[in-house]
Length: 216
Length: 222
Figure 1 (tube, chains in turn yellow, green):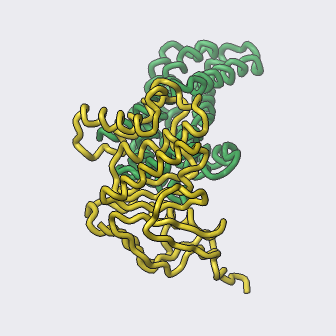
Figure 2: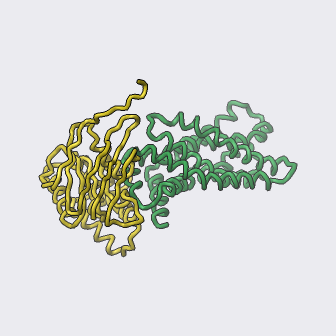
């Protein structure tokens, strides 16, 4: 499997944030995105997930499901956790399991075990019946990250995944990402805090060079 | 289909769980209808005459109170981003969430309306027409509201703008809802025509507005 980014250009408003960016990631590779604030790390990840329209260029996943869009084969972990405060931990996970894994014909048993693995991995088992709104920031983050383990998707786009996690949880996260890469997955992470993880490659983004003159 | 129903059920469960939302809408409806006779004085004939219009307008305003809820919470906590990465197209997501809104707002409002009608001396024979026309008209209210909710997602305090955008679009629903009721209560002529148009408006918005909502959602995900 190979994620190919070809001559990608992304604009936000009138500002070109990314232009002429070409690279590819093979499966079993992890890529670390670095760059100062405002260099377009989040923009790039969101563009890959399909949230932001591409101004030019293409993003495609070679060897993935043909009819599905790239975004449908990605996990995107952004600044927000995507959990419902009114639901318990279990209800949150069950919904994502049904919704994101909806295409697969999994048996009830298989789904349960997926959920249980995720709970154990991120040490959430004791919190199963607690409303997500009552969790601490770090626990909420772990609940959001549990999606990664629970629903199998080949590409992981992680934007500052370790925010509000403690040292121990960062280790868990690093282990999860490492296992995903070793299992043939692709991971891209933008992070300032070292995850304690060896990435195969690093992509350095610079501050956008060109701002289009409109009124000139 | 399983995903679609799952999303509808989730939204209904959330609306129940977060309490407040349904009861606030019904409470607002009650208050608006209840203070009107106080302002107009105890003229029973006058109240009976204006009852259908008041009940309809107050219903639209109450429903409007809650439409921003359709997407706002999901956008705020990041759920929308994850939903967008699911296999279901955003058009169906918008449709599912509008249906859930109709079930949690439109249907309760339509069922409560006859009870409030007694405050306005609504004629007993008008009760079933009121419920039926409201049940036929409220899907349009939810689906159109979803478009406005999706458009105003990124704005702080988008509620006012939402009202400005969406209330004018409710006018056809209001006109044909009232026309149906008048045809039954006052005559002359058959109620079939206005009622058919009211249903048609609802059906058209059910098809078209998810497309507009999805386009607005894509814009707001950027």
